Length: 80
Image 1 (cartoon, rainbow, N blue to C red):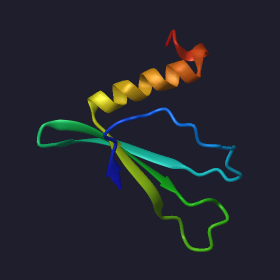
Image 2 (cartoon, rainbow, N blue to C red; image 1 turned 45 degrees about the vertical axis):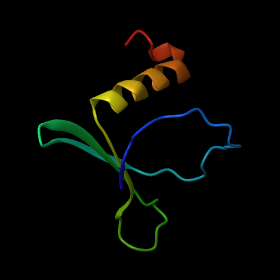
Image 3 (cartoon, rainbow, N blue to C red; image 1 turned 90 degrees about the vertical axis):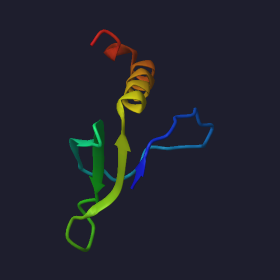
């Protein structure tokens, strides 16, 4: 698990992942700071029972930055 500190553009050679997973989210206060916690769970083909495989946390600043990144990646969302 990690709190997102920063976002940087990437030049990796990425492709669409062949599997899909579910993501659970919740927000909570930590010493007066609101955090958004996101956890992904193993794919449907996982041999063991579902468990959190990756998690990340965003504060208001990193969430605002992610909103901007998403709106730039998906221009059709800019007016939402």
